[in-house]
Image 1 (cartoon, rainbow, N blue to C red):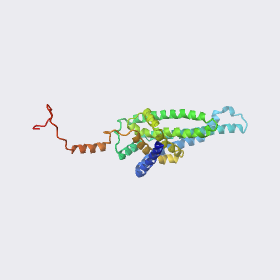
Image 2 (image 1 turned 45 degrees about the horizontal axis):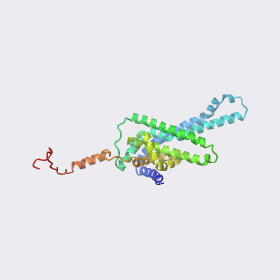
Image 3 (image 1 turned 120 degrees about the vertical axis):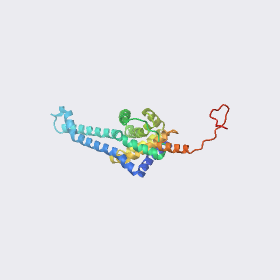
Image 4 (image 1 turned 90 degrees about the vertical axis):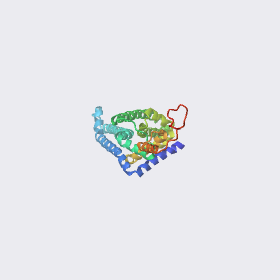
Length: 283
């Protein structure tokens, strides 16, 4: 229960962080806004062409009488559009994170810097980071699809399918949403995806407390655009809890301050030991 509450607190703290850094909030909204526009355009085209697509897929119904032909094709068009909408909901976050990789990397790095002890980022070209992000997102999507098949089958169980299964669906989605959002910060800490999933599974309450409220909020597209920067900031704070930055791996600024401090530090007097070639003369 403590981890569950902690996950919710990280979500709130992330939103507070971007609220205190207005420029970063606007900067972080751009990828979600771009992705939202793309999805809206794609869904508009799908809605406009779904009836024609249904007619193309059912040539055997050309000679059916009214109203059966219209009922069949309208139902099929609705299924096609509903499937596209569901696919959009499942993939929107992954696509937004992919489109916004440079944006969210910069946002997450700024959170680390302001909180202190930012890790040294890996020296990886941007194109390689994008390939890793695509690979990891596809792996998450495959896992989500596997759970989706099981939950879909469970939906046919009386009572349980209408109560327990939807709740489990939100929990599964919340867990994997946390996996996606923490990927930016944990990748900078050189944590591969299997290890990221293992860490979050070990702190399941933390992952669910953070991701499940976001899943419910992200059902409203405009909320997704507004809340995504804070979600990335909160996920970075959560990642700092999962994988604290080792000593000696602070930010460049921290390292510079430490070096300046060392330069003015008076070294202790060397101890004279027999045969010590570094013993000061006359000691």
